[in-house]
Image (cartoon, rainbow, N blue to C red; front, side, top):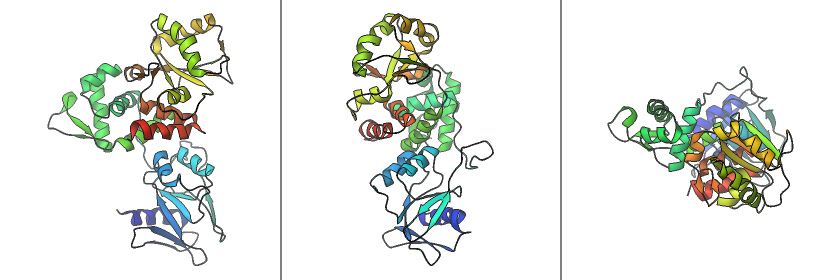
Length: 343
């Protein structure tokens, strides 16, 4: 199905009951929507599957928003919709939702409510288990598909579990068999790494995390991490890695200061020693307004982390964590993606 036909199906689902809808493409391939006879045509900005990176790639230059432009996607993710709201943008997606405001009096508001099992879109999304997330992280970090045994070694999952996860990636079109081998030893290649990253980053950003929040006074988050936290963490043989604002500041500078310090700590240290360590450093555990956030990290986080020389999570996880923080961190996430992932 070409873009004009896809847009036609999506737009008619959302707007046909309001007025007659016409979707046309010109000789340059630009698709326009005409609703009724009173309103001027809207030029379509096609966002495909509606992932945040797709939306920002086509819509980022539009500030302030041109009222004659409308983003159209098969299904916009909630984070995409949130970003479009911040831009005061026009948009339509394949679930029948839309927001359009034009100077000639066209007003359409069909925005999503908070997702519930009953109100969630029937458009299926990939189901992300912990093993699938961990296997995807290795693949995205290495930019290739290692053997199942190698992935199992880095993640702690069995080769069979890893092979099953890889098969689901094949089904989604993100990876593809490159040889005739089957089972754990099958050879694969990355087929659609950008789509895989978008789906994985959304899942990682939305997951529930075991967290310890703390407060300490500092003006230089990197200095505080290296001088106050690194030494005692290393002394107890903890595995740890920075992420969030500090991670971005270390590997893909976008800002000169970090409002909050985010650190992953391995499961054993997090569960048995971290609170005692913080108490010894006179760092207060808090329930709100933290300056330091510790996340309980699975094995893969540290297997794929890099040293700059401070340990930092791999670029895909850094990208996902920055998206999770929202606000200005989304721009830092895009900077990480452009500098370290998509180049």
